[in-house]
Structure formats: structure tokens, C-alpha cells
Image 1 (cartoon, one colour):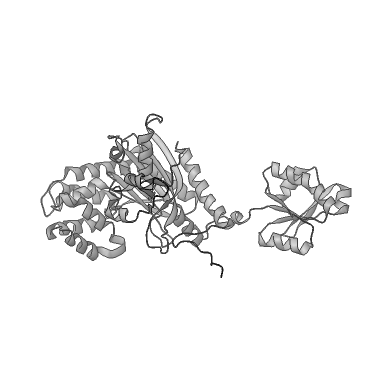
Image 2: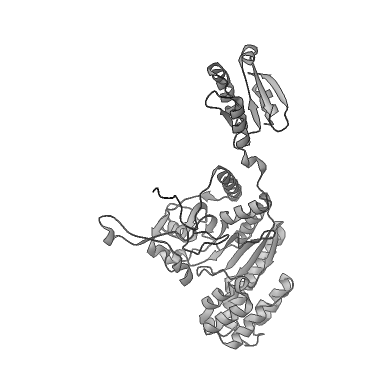
Length: 447
């Protein structure tokens, strides 16, 4: 009995329509990246496991796909794993190629990543990320430009989003004024789950990690702050300067607030059209962030984060190049696809790969239309010639199945007259053109 074909859970095949739509997303994102001076690189699907371990926190390490060594010297070979994201491989790339690149180094990467996660709606084990990062500068202009990139990409895709911004120094301040400076990671991981499990469960998790009740009360007050950006910042300044229940001062928290004020000040003059807001509950549970952190949510479709990132000051130091700050954002192409599909925002023309089909009546007709097809292709039109003579109904059915909007049917009379007959299958309009007048045919095709 033949084995039934299947693919692993959490992965997907992509047909012609899906690829046209995915490339629309990739091309849109790529075009915006380039306008801000970013150039493309690629890194291998697999990395040495030592490159990946310890960079994503304990929970991230558990989701790494490990690759079993094979071959004659398998026992001596370093352990390997599939990349979990594009940021850590990028940091490795920068250190390894530091003498070949110019700083600040601006790169983008569009490649798949793998996570041994439980597959569910909007969450896959294999998915593409579209990353844009700059390393070698501390300037907050880079954070602002990343928000501008997000704004432009989602405006072009016609998706309304909310860009949420926080700062990991502010989160460090949370831990300090909560009286638990050594529990920054535990507090961050717990807060990062607020949207998923609610405040009570977040507080329960912090208790399990040994955060004192007085500290939990301080964090509860912070997460409950409301009002404008200025309102929240002023209240946080007071708390970081000893105005919380603990009376503890946090210089790190104050530094984070200063960075947020500068970033939002620049955003005010940057002309952002999408919604941008300070979200003090935003934590992003990856250990390598040290400054600004970002997360983007679609406003009109229920799904998790579709874009996220932040600043990391220490990532390249892990690979032997300390003191090189970087900041970046990753676009989740698969979730963006789901949003565009759910909102029916994909352009209709993406579903039509071919503009014009030349029907074939016989050998003479085939030879007659081939030069015309070549001329149209030379002008950028997608043209097919039906591969063999057969009944016209079959050829019309083929055009209908592929949503081809125009068909050209030519017989002996058209050959004698030197014309090409073109029919619009949507409107029914039909015209004959001299075969040499390519411009006229292009006009009829709307090109």
C-alpha cells in the first residue's frame, strides 16, 4: 500500500497563488528597507548549537531544533541547530566578517526560521522573518527610522497597526524599585505574558519566582498607569526617583525614560501615520534586549504580534566583539499574510499570473503568433501560448481556471490579413490589431 504523502505539523506547502501573495509581501518590505539604505545578506539555515544556546532565555532554548550529526566523523563534529531567529546569526556574521564591512552596518535578511513550538493558529514551526538591523551606532535616530519603516510598510500593505514601544532599562527600573534587582529576567518573562494570561496569573508567576508582595504591588501600580505618554512618563519619573511605595531610586529606569522621551520627540516630527504608543507592559521575553523594544499589532484582525524588535548592546560581545550596539526589527511574514488574507487586502491582480493566452488552432497558427508573443514578453507582458492544438472549449476552460483576462484566437483569415484578434474575457470586448502594432495591443491589454 502506497504511503500517504504528508508534511510535518507546523509547516506548509505554498502553491502558485500563495507564492504570488508572499512575494508581494516580501517585495513591499524589501523596497522599503532599501529606501533607508539597508543591503541584503543571508546566513546558513543551520548554526553551531553553541552560537544559538543561551541567547533566547531558558524558554527559547527549549524551542531550538537540534540537528543530529551524521557522517564518518559525526562524533567529533560540533552540535548544530536550525536558526531560531535571524538576529543571533546576524551578530555572529558581524563578528566573523568585521574586517570586511563598514560601520554603521545596515543589513536586511528575508529567510525562514524554525521553532519547536506547539503548532496553532498564527504559530508555525517553520516561518519566514524579514529582519532589518543596524549595528555600530548608539543613535536613537535608528529607533525612529525603524518605526518609520514599519509605518511605511504597513501603509503600503493597507494594514492599520498599533506600534507599541517600551524600554528594557525601564523594565530594569521596575525590578529595582520593586526591591528585586536580581529578578529582572523573571519579572520580564512574567510581564511579557500579560496579554495572554492576565494580571492575576502574572502576579502569581512573580510570586513563584520569589518577588516580594511589596514589589508586586509596585509593578501592579506601574502596569495600571493610564493617560498620555507625558502623563505616564511623569508618574514613572516620580516612582524612579523614590516616589514608589519602596522608596528605592532607579538611575537605570530614569535613563530608559530619557531614551523614550527622545525617541517619541523625534517621532513627533517624523510624520508617522500609524498609531504609536508607550506600552509599559511590553517586555519581549528575549534576554538580549537592552534598550528600546517594539511590538506591532494589527488593529483590524485578531492575531498575535506581526512585527517586533529592539536594541541590543551586548549581543556581538558574546562572540568576541564588545561595545557594538545594534537595533533591529523583524517582520513576521506569515502572520502578515494571514492578516492580509483575513482582511481581503491582497491586490486582485496577484491572482492572475498570465495576462494573455494565445489559443492554438494548428501548426501554422502557432508559428504565426510566436513572434507576437515574443514582442509582448519583451515589453513585460506575461503571455502564454497553449502548448498544443485542441478544442477551443478546453483552451477557454484553461484560461478561466487560471483567471487569465485576455485570449487571442487566430486562424487562417487572421494570418492572411496580418492581424491579431484579442478578446477581453471579463468585458467581452474584442478587437483585431495589425500584428506589428504592439503598442496598440498593449493599450488594449491595459499595459
